[in-house]
Length: 153
Ligand code: ATP
Image (cartoon, rainbow, N blue to C red; front, side, top):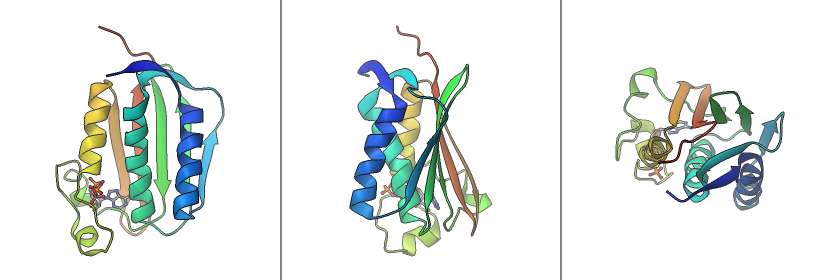
């Protein structure tokens, strides 16, 4: 890992600006404090955030909300969409390599089922976590939890 100080607020602002221009979607960033600073590998964290946003874009047609928070333990990036959602019985499978929910597989969205597997690995490298909550037909909330302070070896 290439660890340095990362400002999650400005990182997300940059990512959202680019994705909004390319995909012409309404994506809103919500945060109550700035900056939110963590020690992390900026490029890898960026990749994980893009994976969540790419999924939100692929599996919904409505607006997307991104929330940034920090507490004593974690800095949190939460991506919320109002799209097709994930059936409850599939939630445990979606982090597997090459796994795609049937509906997604038959959609024209492309994708190899690698994104979440990669995002999970990136979180593991940071001693962080990825959590997904979803309701079929209502939408999905995907969360990256990064340690508020990463201890260096
Ligand atoms: P890619 O390799 O391009 O990321 P993918 O999107 O299929 O392809 P993952 O990001 O690993 O792969 O997601 C795995 C599966 O989980 C998807 O195929 C889809 O079925 C489901 N999924 C992930 N995110 C969402 C979401 N926001 N809404 C609905 N389904 C989702």
